[in-house]
Image (tube, rainbow, N blue to C red; front, side):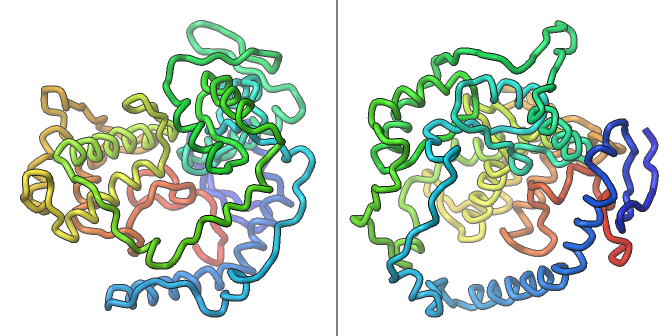
Length: 370
C-alpha cells in the first residue's frame, strides 16, 4: 500500500490510509496530540538536555544520590489515595501485546486484569499501534473476533478455564506473595491458574497494601552497589543470541517473542545489550580470567551471522517494510561496540522509535517540526 501524506487535526501523517484507521485517527484525537506537542515539546527538549548534563557529571565522577529537595517526601508519613473498586484485587494480571488474538485469549484467561501493552511487547509499527486501538475498542464493546489464518479457527470472547502447562513458575510466585506483592504478572494464559493457586493460598485479603515492609531500609549505597557474581562465556553468548533473535522478530513487527522457555519483550533485548556494553566498557573479566574487549566480542560474531552449529542462526535480509538492510547481528555488534546506554543516537527498542527502515521518518509529526 502506497504511503500518502495528509494533514488531519493539525498533524501531517505520512502513512497509508488503511480501512478502519479513521475510527481512531479522528480530527479531535489528532488535534489533541498536536496540542500536546505544542505545549510540552519545549519542556521535553529541556529535560533531555538536563539529562545529558547530568550524565556528563556522572562521567566526571559524580555519584547518583537521593535529592535533598525530596527528603520531606521520603521521610514523611503519607499514603496513596484509595484504589478504585475494580482494581482492589489484582492477584493475577496478564499482560501482552494488543493484537486481536492476544486480547481475546487474555480476556478469556481468568486473570483479574489484562494490561494492554503498547510498549515493550508491541513492536510499534504504524499498523500495530493504530490497529491495537481498534482491537481494544472492539474488545470494550464485546464485538472482537479473530479467525486464525490457515486453520480457520474462530476466537471470540467467552468463558474459558485456565490450565497450567508445565512451566515451573510456582517458586517465583511464592516469593512474590511472601514479599508482600498485591499480585503477579503472567505472560501466558496457561500460567493463570498456577499463579492464582499460589496467591489464593497465601493472600486471603484482596491485596497486601497493609503490608508496609517497614523492615526494609534502602540507601543510595545499596542501589549503587555492584552485583557480585560470575560472568561467563555462556552468559555472553546467551545475551547476544537473545538480543539478535529478539531484534529480528521486532523488525518483522512482533514484539512479544518466546525465547529459551521465556516470553521476552523489548526490555530483555535492552538488558542483554546493556549488560554486554557494561562488561566491555569496564573491561570486566569472564570466567576464564580474560577481559571482554570489543575485539573478543566481535570474534563471537560467528554464531550471530548464521554459522552452523548449536548457535547457528540465519537472519532475514529484508526489513518489514523496506529494502535490504544491515542484518540484525551486525546492528547489535555495532551498537554494543560503539555506544553506551542513554546516549544520543542510540536506538532503543521501544514504542516511539517505531520498527522502520533506517533513515525513515516517523509517520506522525507536527508540521512545525518537519
